[in-house]
Length: 494
Image (cartoon, rainbow, N blue to C red; front, side, top):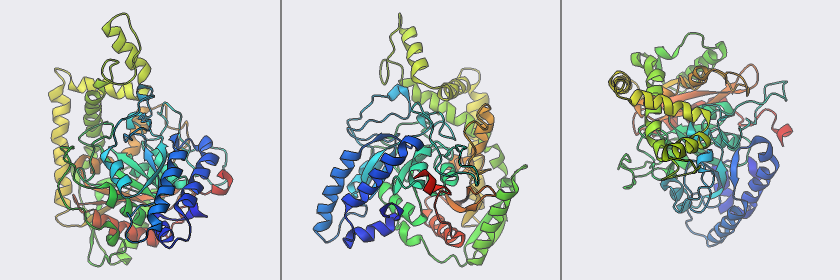
């Protein structure tokens, strides 16, 4: 089946003319038609545009010679990236009818390399959530099922849950995500795929709807580490329109996959052995350590003493920036407008109807910590702790090349579990947030199955702008795990 191909395999098949881009894209469009009604992975499906683009790709391929790397490859685009002429909602009623007249830099880079967009993937509203249950367009269903339980609906993780589910269910060969505190890595772990948050500044944020500007970073999600490397190669690059974009050369990420790890030093942070960690997460971590040792790595115990404050710090910094970024959606300047008898009533009615409960909660939290009398006590102090967290990582990387940790504290949980307690939901990001606070690259790679038959991910964290070492270590873990990348009940889903 064409939907079973990896991006790397599809590139070769297209160039050898074993199948056409129209056939490849058509197979994925057909899969979306069959499954999206159940999974709800896409908010907007662009079948006709995709097939038209596929026919253009075939014309380019027929010409022979060098063709752009992603020519004819069907991708899903997280509905946080502005796409010229295609509705972009951020999964919010506030932007329900927004059709951008411009293209984000990341998606423009992918289009320039020949990618075909099959639709805009679902997410937690404005990327705020870790289960993809806060979308105004409905929750996303994880295509995986617990062993022996075909009825319980599992969450795909968030906020990039629609992208993760689409890739896992073979609705797209890859997808874009954004990661603020783990929103690429955690859903990748829950859905049994690979996903990388590159170094902050590696991918342009221009044209991507903002949640927390000092944390948001775009990255790829795909079924294999190599496919993520191929996608990041296209997505990354300097952009003068983004003041946080870093002017540094983009290396050959694909070449790093499969590189020898002999002599690589892998740090194991003591602070990630948190109290109450499930035995199966601990076992997966120990297995990953053994695999890297067998690959020639030296295992080194390290300490990141301030990372224990990472989650608390994140939930001060991120809501504060969210409060500032979302102030523009007031019924006057941007987005939905709900009439009111006065300007204050217009603001209140617009934001009450336009924003969901979780977004309102975070705006209120952020407004509080930025308010007079609390700014120094909360926001300013959080920024100081964030700097200490960053220094922890810098100190660790003086002695090791990468760090290895679990990605998430559990496999995917069911819709309805944990959801009455926001703090429990926030704890899903306990292992991913520190790398986001430090701005360093981090990748989740599938490492096996839980006792209930659900995927478990391991996280590789690297130095700033050293995604190559992350890809090298992650690809070694992937080979050792021999993970099949197939949802457990995919045949039933289809």
